[in-house]
Length: 132
Length: 132
DNA sequence: TTATAAATGTTATATTATTACATAACGTTA
DNA sequence: TAACGTTATGTAATAATATAACATTTATAA
Figure 1 (cartoon, rainbow over the protein chains, first blue to last red):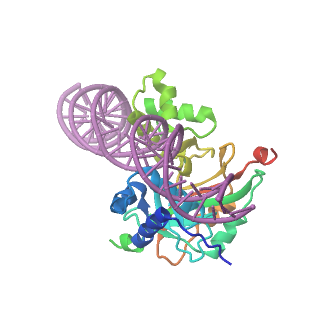
Figure 2 (cartoon, helix red, strand yellow):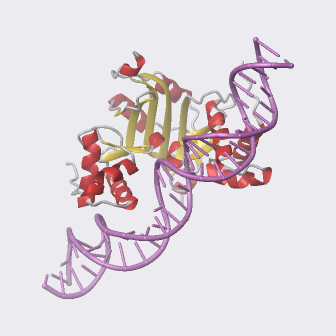
Figure 3 (spheres, each protein chain N blue to C red):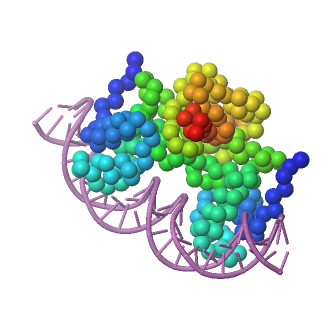
């Protein structure tokens, strides 16, 4: 059973705009877009982003300082994220590959560290950009 | 045969300070430390960092906006990086695990994307912090 | 209904990174 | 060694990303 998160007003606004965009969005570009909805300050955006990341509705693409809506219907996997990023067109998509996620979730080494979470970013050229 | 990179004056200064620190360092903390050596502007630091990343002498920890000296003697693996990060003490170490790097370097999916490079960051509690 | 937590609003500021432009040093090769 | 292209440096300004601090309001649940 999936836990239901009732998004607050600002959280809904911010999530919708990211979700509709279909790709990664940066905080200040979100801010620009939501000014018409009464959200005027960076902090309002960042607070919503923090919460949305926390509950797994969006993920942060660390290497791009950008945020993308979770593509997996369950949206509960904020602890295990993997993305492919095109270095040419900057297209980002979430990788959902159960073998990969199993492999990484079970990864352990001799450091004695307990891994709780990971983020993986692959870089390369997407199909389109490759053929240009 | 390993390619020899002759570091420039600023590059040497910046690399040495990161290397000696033994851990991740942030750009402006580096800047602070190298003022006595005549490096006064952020750009001087960022330019050296960019070059050092490019040639694989250091890596960027994306989730922390910090830079760490490459721990692998060869220092040629800027295309395949993996780190473990303690969320409590913020200790970072480079993971060198040939199985993991093979697995990831050979990873491919049906996206048609050619993966050239990856960065993986594991989060958790290190041995010390776990036992506190 | 009251108190507790979560969310919001607002201003200011901290932190991280780049643009733009001028100059100097270095490496090659003619 | 002169001329050329490339790489590195210096400097000022500013852009982009993110958080601190504090006051207030709204939602939740005891």
